[in-house]
Image 1 (cartoon, rainbow, N blue to C red):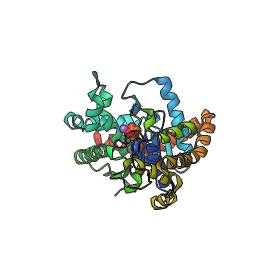
Image 2: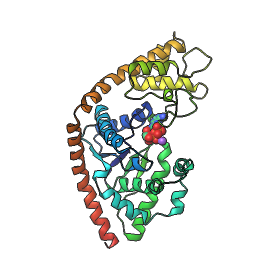
Image 3: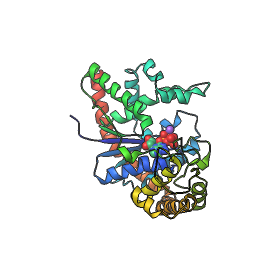
Image 4: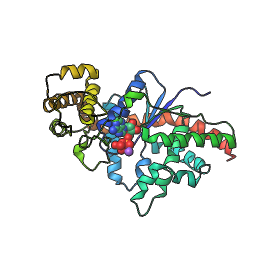
Length: 329
Ligand code: ADP
Ligand code: NA
């Protein structure tokens, strides 16, 4: 058996939205505060699977570092590092690529979706899930917090672990997807609540971003699509729009849905939106201030990442040596 260890990756793609924040980063902060053994990787190699701008990527890596620290990730408690600085990720990716099959990868819905609109599909996009499996297995991670859309990738990782172990001897654990029920409830698009809030939605008014200015947050919430009823009730089956606002409100205030509905008893949805916007803006304020402050000090951010690289490399090198022995190389 393998000791419990959590691995999470996040792409350094500019703006984090409220869904990423509460569905991922805020959950990591909770796990960190529960003293979990945890690694968080800024997965820059994954960001190159679609065409990218090097200057922008470099800036985004530091901005993501500042964002994670601003949200409460503590580099003393968690190993926070930039994926590409630990070279063993790509080596293990290759080793697992020699175990994986083309047919299995081509079958993944995420790949089908992303490649559908492309004329020339980068090979990196195709093997992206193998790199993801390498990220996880390199640290013999046992738990991987993910959104529902990533479950298939965890299943692939489990298969690759099993296939490698069968061929070359017990090496890797069987990693589990960590989905903590209601806490991972999907936030909906503000413009079309039938869709999830996503950075890939072309309409920027469909989401709230962590670095949005207060005016912008207020406007987007004011324009959030609800329905023809004016009362504030929680009914995700029938009233997805207003229920989504209540979920957001509940999360940023730490109040229960019941308390919020009581509190909003005398308000119509128009008035209620102002209350939600206010709560989001005040929740974001200290985080935004901290991020702004950190971004001013790139040397500090680089030092944090360097310390993370050193910590991650110790584990990575140990696994790599073991893998090389097993493979006869
Ligand atoms: P996007 O859909 O914006 O591209 P990603 O796929 O990069 O977001 O998601 C990264 C993580 O953020 C997911 O694994 C999930 O935990 C969280 N997440 C993304 N969108 C939402 C959402 N609408 N509600 C809750 N969590 C979300
Ligand atoms: Na996505």
